[in-house]
Structures are given as structure tokens and as C-alpha cells.
Length: 119
Image: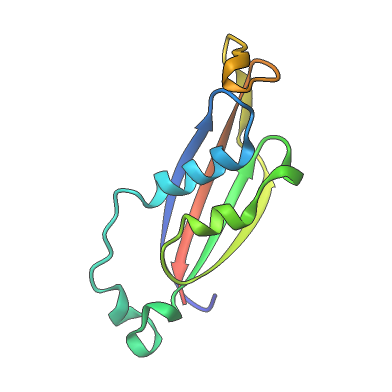
């Protein structure tokens, strides 16, 4: 990415089920959910949304190998999307194991996201 125009941040949690992808998608959605970008096209090369680049940075606590980055990319509606993953976030006790929610243990996964938008 040659020029970053703005960065949005968010947090996503999977309280039950220990699904790192679900927590990551929620973090990205949290970062972009309440934003409108009027005028973004005017800032992009050739004033085209398809020229927008989006870099999603995720801090995940566990199970990086189980993260489905294609599902994360689908959470971004426009532009070409890349995903970078680093250690971080948090795994902490939810206080209860609910087998009917798919729990293998009592952990909840918390993922942090930084969504960089530019060209």
C-alpha cells in the first residue's frame, strides 16, 4: 500500500465455541460497522473503489493455523484485501463450558483488528 488514508480498529469475541475465525470476523466488522466513507472514491487512483487496498491486521491469541483468512476477507465489501496475523488478543475464561454451544473448554477468544484503507 503506497498511501494509508485511514485506520479503523475493532475487537471481536467468540464467547463459546472457541472459533478464532468467528472472533476475527467480528473484530473486522466492529472496526468498519459504524463508518461511512463519503468521498473515498475521490481519494483513490482514477477515483475507483476497485483501486482501494485494505490491509487487515489481526492479533489472535491461539489457533492461528485454524484462522480462515478468506472468511475475514469477505467481511470487507470493497477493494483488494490482504490479511496479516500476529500473536496478541486474549484467551480467557468465560466462566462456564456449554457443550450445546460447541465448547471444548471454558475459553473465550478475543481478537483485535486494525483495518488500514488506502491505495
